[in-house]
Image (cartoon, rainbow, N blue to C red; front, side, top):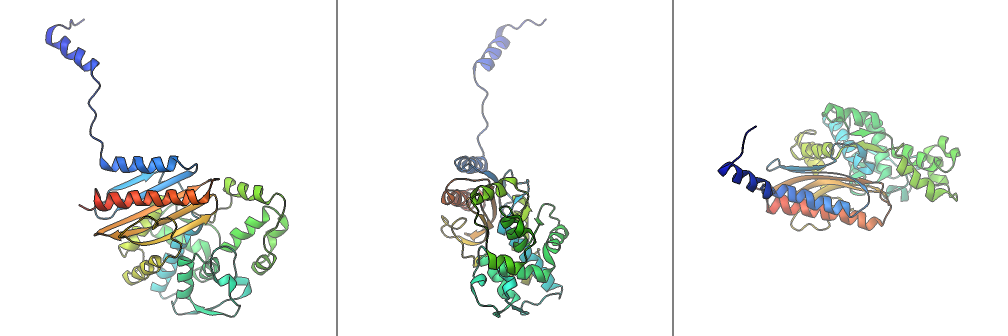
Length: 331
């Protein structure tokens, strides 16, 4: 056995008595902690991804798990439509006529307008994004080949988790059938005319519908949605001209209670995904002060005040914007 004496013994005593020197914390780690702290203040499941396109620096918090997209899936639908325009399969000016069977509940204005209204594919795509119009969404689905075509487009682009599962009509029909099985076979026109069932158990049924997660509208990981937005920004998700048009549409978003809420000096393009009070997703890009940032914030299983959930997304985005633009992400 070695005998420890003299200077060696003194050094050993100092090492065991003093705490190990801590490495200085990286600013990006402080950003991540700040975002985690906001998430912990709201009882929900979170998936968060953000990246500076200037430096490649990123943060990821449970960013690789597929989560319910709700209307965030309309960004992949948008990409699919424009890629088909590039291929000559669709024309942005082609006419679409609104019929009763096209009308869908939820977000959007087309459901309130008279049948026989004429619009173009470009009109439908614009409304699908800036108003999250579900009627316009299913009109687009009918033209591009449905959810399977959107999913295949995402696979062609290399995204493994972005999956378009069902149309707006199919989701709303399933949403109705949880309280009344007779809805399982209704047509689109019948569902829109009949409305949702008003049963004593409806509130409990709705909560169980979200909690079970058996009937998703779409699925995707935050990281891959961020990657899709990056491809659009770089002009790589479709032709450069089509990507510029997609960016223009995303910048016209009218539902601005999340990502843009606390941003000063930023140009924002984004797309929300809602199922109150459970889900308040938002994904998008932030531009300004020579910065380009993508962000995807997903959440689910929230049962509190919806405005608080939305505000948490806003505060997370503000932290990302301030860090990447003014501290670490633009050098």
